[in-house]
Image (cartoon, rainbow, N blue to C red):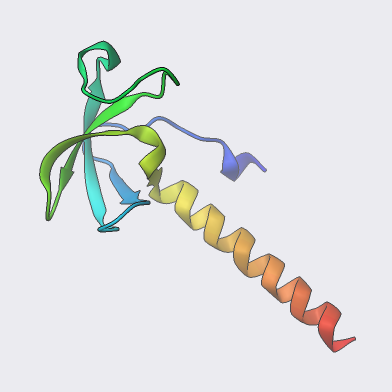
Length: 90
């Protein structure tokens, strides 16, 4: 599906945080991974994020979804549950 194509967020884009405290955040920039405290052996990008509770943080990118990706994930989940429900009814 074309809508599932991941796009790197732009500065100011809203992101959904996929870890506690699960919030909407604002993407600031990609941080140089070599200058961060996390173990970057997986070479995952580290993003600078503005969080409403935690403030300005640096976090691995895998903790975040763009809103477009989150909407796409919700649609897929909904479609699977409808198909499962139809199968159970038949």
